[in-house]
Length: 283
Image (cartoon, rainbow, N blue to C red; front, side, top):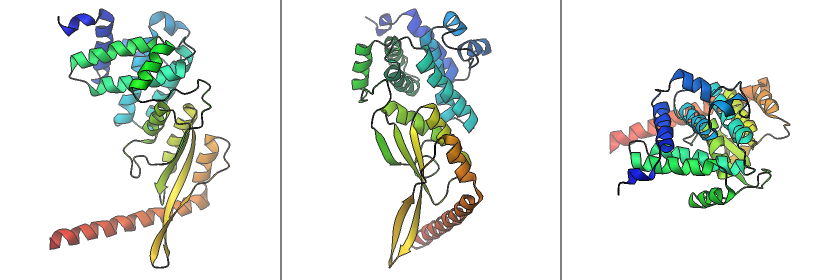
């Protein structure tokens, strides 16, 4: 029996919407209906569309913005829309854990593009999880090696040394925060080498505030200590909200430190390229 028989019209309709959206072929009217941030999910949107359709579109819209060439404001808008859909639209009391699984499944759906059967299986899983049944959600959390987190979101989970794409990492600040939320991390310290752009700090702290994650920004410096180098990390503290962190990094004295850090990074880059040129010339 063909595997196609295991999937119904709703699975195929959702898959068509997912693929057309990732290919940027979405009908403008459909996009406005599914993704109007001015409308509350429990209002008119609940009459016009299904929760699973809006959730799917919200995740895809976020993935497109964070993996594409969109600017920080687009990424943050997409992240806020996703969080609103998770928190306000879901009828289950298990909404945060449900949302974490749905985002992870949708990431898998996007990665499986080109394999229709695999995508349909994942779409079917997505629709099962979207109902928010705790037993089903828990089974999918386990299958994706994700720990169940309290719906009060007051767990003691942290990662005190991570990097985004501005240093050693591969993910932009919004993507980093989204992944931390999926993993259930509630406290994060993001480290930058010598300097950081205040715009990056603004995106990072705003994204963290949206997802209810406590984030700190650290600057790692290297100094001569005897005949060796010593690395140390400065993590400013004592801020009440994201705006305070942003304002701190925009202050003139801090900006002066960051400018010196930019010079240090330029020197490191120059020395690295010189070393590579020397190696290539002699080997």
